[in-house]
Length: 98
Image 1 (cartoon, rainbow, N blue to C red):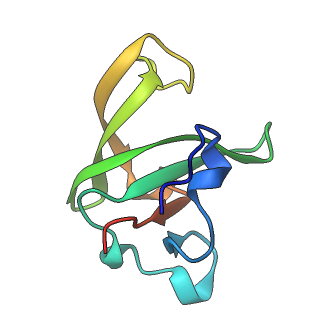
Image 2: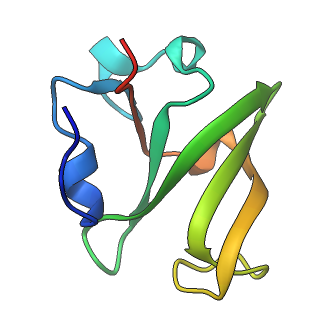
């Protein structure tokens, strides 16, 4: 079940994706839950290029746990942080806990 890779797109195989922005059959963010893995799309890369784990969902905010990031919100950073992201920032979510 584990993707076996640190390459972000490997974590979002179709059979594990429970939410994807712009895809009608997977447009309900309400199915996302604690422990799910989320991805953020970077247009300049043309792919999901940063990911983390959902800690909780509070209204329009998603509390996340993210590595390789920094206080400025970039995808390359100096540590592991708890962040508060808007739902609209999340491109897709995968569930590996069945």
